[in-house]
Amino acid sequence: MIEVRNLYKSFDEKDVLKGISTVFEDGKTNLIIGQSGSGKTVLMKNLVGLLEPTSGQILYDDRDFVKMTKKEKVMMRREMGMIFQSAALFDSLTVLENVMFPLDMFSSMTLRERTKRAMDCLDRVNLVGAEQKYPGEISGGMQKRVAIARAIALNPKYLFCDEPNSGLDPKTSLVIDELLHSITREFNMTTIINTHDMNSVMGIGENIIFIYEGHKEWQGVSADIMGSTNKRLTDFIFASDLLKEMRQAIVHETIQKK
View 1 (cartoon, rainbow, N blue to C red):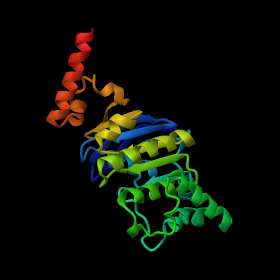
View 2: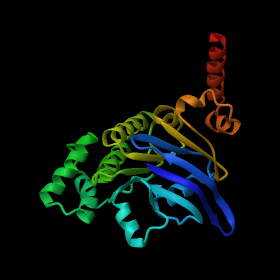
View 3: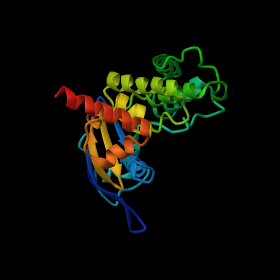
């Protein structure tokens, strides 16, 4: 579990995060959503230590990440897996070598053990047979699956995903969503996903935090969204006319049943 308490982050005396308090739960897909410029990316960067909060606490299972020394934070990051928007694979390394990279850097396993662990991760994301290919030889969806395999290679307790569906077609996005969701359950990780994808929000949003102008505007699960009375949330989620009509129809049907 990751708990955020009264988190502030300022740049040049401008508050970007304004007293955010929330909990990201174990074994669930926790989603951060919000408009561009709302502060959700800044929040994630604070969570992983790429930015230093102005004030507040970030507790990893009651361990205050903000107060840790540089060495302690380096050790803490070994418990984290990260999936970047662009997949961020090494073009000069094979798929297998990409997945083995964190094992080569941070584990004391033998070469045979590292290879087996990497192959097990590739098997988990259904990529056995592609291990000798290079990133340029596989599709964007396959690259994202390689990134997931690499992120779980060290068996992290915490998984951070920055726009994992960016650039993918809707069908492939659903595959990635289901994969992240099932892996989260399987390994009981605390998974945090920064996303604009409304299919992800409605499909795997087990704990959703909506950020608006730097503060936590709303928190709940996907099933709560349709009946929400928070106008800022509904304006964001149901931005298109089609989605607005769908919501109105569902609300009307609910009222009729009552």
